[in-house]
Length: 275
Image (cartoon, rainbow, N blue to C red):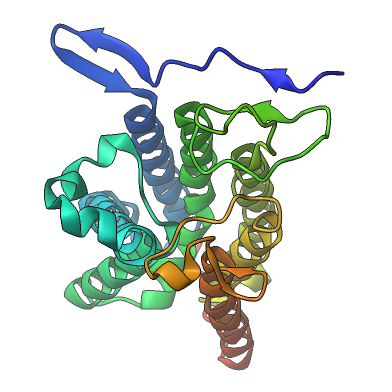
């Protein structure tokens, strides 16, 4: 089978007058709505805080944390020189350029603030949000594929894809690998574990498993993903140290934090579940 050359997908899904609706925006919308409804569903399974109503109110906080954190993380980690030269580009998120690790920090900050404001456990809300997050990752990586961005390294495998701007070289569709591992696989694993009482009685477990699962998936796919161009000229090829990329470097503390959360949850006294 010959490598697949595509006449690339139009990033604009449809237009309403002068307003262009992009697949990228629809992916974020699907992720937020799907995650929001799933969080409410999970909150109804165990009658404890946060309640479905509290998860309903958290949506705005989650959106702000994801968008602000994701964009600022991308600017700082991957494109500081470019955005410093033209700061107006920072607000043009419809052109792509969001860092998951930055978005994660933004969401964590939003959960801390919201949990303190409402007076319930940070671990309890983080478990719900973590279990639903792969929905957004699934759609987000598909949007990366549609945008022809964040593609993989050159390959001679039969499913190699020639992306726009890839100089006619077939490359790994690493966005689809990530959509499958970070999105679908992680969603199924967390959904199965979320149904187990022994897991739900130990807040922090699901959040920890999500961090470890995402970190391992991202670290693995980075071996075939084209490294992102980084800030200093010394890192022009995207490698931070030897063959370690920025994405892999940022995934290591995620894995470590996830393992700590799992161990910490196991050591705490299990909470009672009200039915």
